[in-house]
Length: 242
Image (cartoon, rainbow, N blue to C red; front, side, top):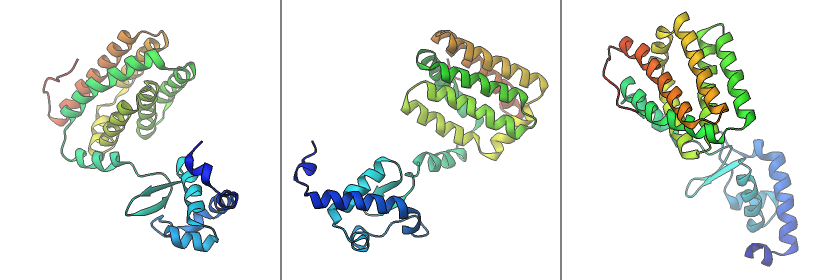
């Protein structure tokens, strides 16, 4: 048992429960335009409870992802902002397609290898559905969204939060409009058919629990993408990768 719980008075526990109930009900109305909640002292006074009881209630809400706190700044409603977004926006202006493909060649085959070991049957079924969505998409915007969702599902299935974070940064760099324009220009009927077939090969290797084949299929897919896209950016530098 938590030592704090051992010394908590029944009244404190009752106040914490009441604070939690009130906060859940009024959370959307309590914060200011920036999402910041009032200082703990003001919030406790407004709710008519002790600060200790309030802190307990806030800990529960933070664990549930309904608020986030940062020392010196305060308590905010919603999920903690990701630093990856700022980092990706900065990198988008400092990197180039060759560098991105080189990173993808090191990261995504590894993700596919781990996915072959860890993906659930539900993951695999969803990968197949997403590839079907790519095939059936009627416009480039839809294809982009479903393609991104498929690669993300593979990354999630790898079961490694740090690798997933790297993948998310790469994805956000690729959302830059210049990147999107290159991909659309490189996409034609033959390329679309090739990508769908390559996706299917990656998924099949994951489904048969063959890590080496999954990594090899993903490597082939990334190299095909680079072959189709880099010349449009005036780049034909040999890629350093597996």
